[in-house]
Image (cartoon, rainbow, N blue to C red):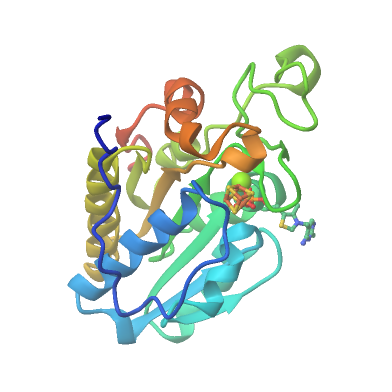
Amino acid sequence: MTEAAPRLVARDRPELILGDHGLCPGCGEPVALRILLEVLEELGIVERSIGVVGHGCYGSFVQIMDVEVLQCLHGRAPSCATGIKRVRPAAVVFTMQGDGDMVNEGLQEVLHTAARGENVTCILLNNGVFGDTGGHQTATTVVGQRTKTSLDGRDPETHGYPIPVAELVASLAGVSYVARGAVSTAGGVARTKRMLRSAFEHQLAGDGFGLVEILTMCPTGWFVPAGSGPEYLSGSLEAAYPLGELPLRGQP
Ligand SMILES: Cc1ncc(C[n+]2csc(CCOP(=O)(O)OP(=O)(O)O)c2C)c(N)n1
Ligand code: SF4
Ligand SMILES: [Mg+2]
């Protein structure tokens, strides 16, 4: 008899999840949503929280999460979060964006928001593809990764190099916390949850901008079987983007 794979998350779901998600089997984004909601619950900040969501598969979470959420134009979530936080400084404001949303469509938004030291928490769900529109290459697709628009693998000569947005943000003054986690293993889920908690604690202390990048499985966009997502993630995105809290290099 083969041993069952360990569950990534506990069986009971938080009360803040109102229904089933409609995402693909093996997708990592619902796991990220779950730990985010658990952290809001555990910190007792649900009623003060306002999320700003971009466009991607995670966009459908607005229908199942019992938290105030604004969905804004592609890539613009950090700017909308800025506005909300400035008029409602007591609110806990976070964004949820994909790599296509944050790093392709809206790179300037997150960099300027970080450089201004806005006291918000940005969450990047990085699967290395435009998942929602069919698995095309994004700015974070790693070298050699096959996508619908790089069938022979990303080639720097043709496609350029990936953009490590967490490292860029960590180089800016005004930033209080930057970390990168992954939801491909049970241990990774637990570590990533601790990162989210730290980021929100920094926001509650008024320390300035925070970013948590979460590497998530997209078996559909990667054209691999649903069960192979975690293994594929380890050999691709996780190998190229080191996990952990990043040293902040931009302090004035
Ligand atoms: C201005 C604009 N450009 C393109 C689109 C189409 N679009 C919607 S979702 C999406 C993919 C988003 O990818 P990502 O942010 O990586 O999220 P994922 O689906 O991978 O979770 C794109 C290109 C759009 N809605 N608006
Ligand atoms: S396409 Fe990828 S990111 Fe979108 S729901 Fe499916 S597995 Fe998740
Ligand atoms: Mg993506």
